[in-house]
Length: 77
Image 1 (cartoon, helix red, strand yellow):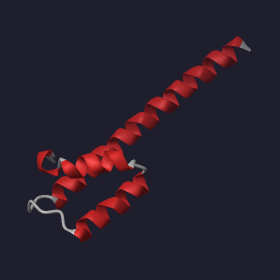
Image 2 (tube, one colour; image 1 turned 180 degrees about the horizontal axis):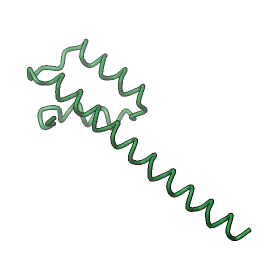
Image 3 (cartoon, helix red, strand yellow; image 1 turned 45 degrees about the horizontal axis):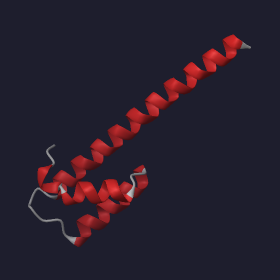
Image 4 (spheres, one colour; image 1 turned 30 degrees about the vertical axis):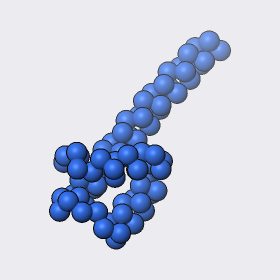
């Protein structure tokens, strides 16, 4: 039973590590989309709508999206 429990804990740690990395990669991809949309120094309503849809698809929360959009001028690809 102890062997199973230790391996199960290790399994959960590995899954959580991959989940965190996967989420970080998705957030980085989204930041790249924001940077591309802001390449002309303007985020119009169509771009904001598109970005909101993509953020929702990948599971970013509103605060993360708001932060990236408000700092779009600082994002680099």
